[in-house]
Image 1 (cartoon, helix red, strand yellow):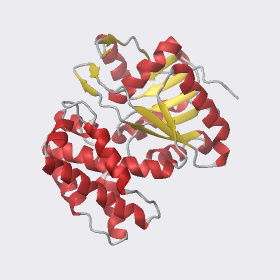
Image 2 (cartoon, rainbow, N blue to C red):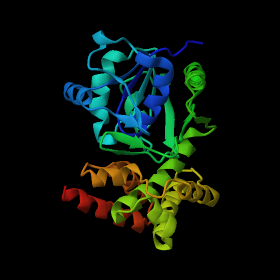
Image 3 (cartoon, rainbow, N blue to C red):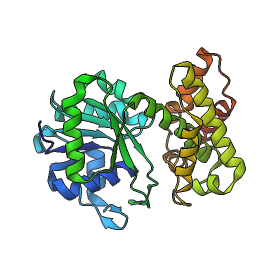
Image 4 (cartoon, one colour):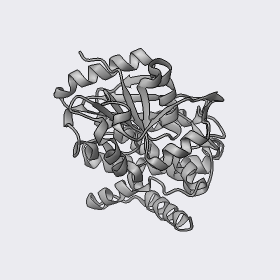
Amino acid sequence: MNEIKTVGMIGRGAIGVIFGHIIQQTLNDDMVFIVDEDRYIKYQQYPLYSNSQLCNFRYCTNVDDFKIVDLMIYAVKFPALNNAIEISKPFINDDTIIISTLNGISSEDILRETFKNNNVIRCIAQKMDSVYQNNEVNYSSTGELVVGMDNKYQKDSFNTLIHFFDKVHIPYVISDDIIHDQWSKLMLNCGVNQVCAAYNIPYGGIQDDKAMKSKMIETMKEIQAVAQCMNIILTDDEIDNWVKAIDALGHDAMPSMRQDVLAHRKTELELFSGTIIPLARKYHIKVPQNEYLYQTIQDIESHF
């Protein structure tokens, strides 16, 4: 089994900082953030902190200043994925293992259009409550990565990835059905991310307000109905477990979509209800909560 000794990270947001900081503790300068020229200049000028600890990350714009990496992690927002793929190409060869922490169910398929199929391992980032503001990332829950194989030819790459997680102490869960689990996470995101963004509330707004919690659950049940038409069974127990997970997060913390709204950034709406609504129409499923949230967030974005 090969060993991961070098890591490239693209996306220095709330998730990228959490896991980049963890990896850096073991790899030091063998973990690098790949950036464009503008970000390189910006990041050199302003220090970054993770839970009050200074992050002395290494940044790189050119593979000649680093090397081909053994592991590439995409932690960008969906609108930036295509550009991230382009700037990362020189750092990747046929042996590079690739994971994406993006929300939704489509980023791995997009990556597999460019890179070696069996080295793109499906991944879910979940249960963290990190907030990125003013060059600081603060969180009470590190969360975890959920990873799984969706074909038998990924076994070597997958085992190498798990060995690396153990070495650098990344919290992870191995999924026996990663496609199902990605849909389950999508169900959560459609509920909590969209409700918090549309109604301008943190997690505490759902924890404390029965009406908001009900909207979140109703939205999730619509994804449950769509998934069933695709032979993906999302149970009521899964919904209950996600509600409990949200109740355990920091009261003032918030999901990424609300952070985007507050920062007047384009959200990942198309990964959530933007994915579900066309499928619902195809299978003749009514999804009024998702349609309302989609329109509401579109209206919010139009005023940025």
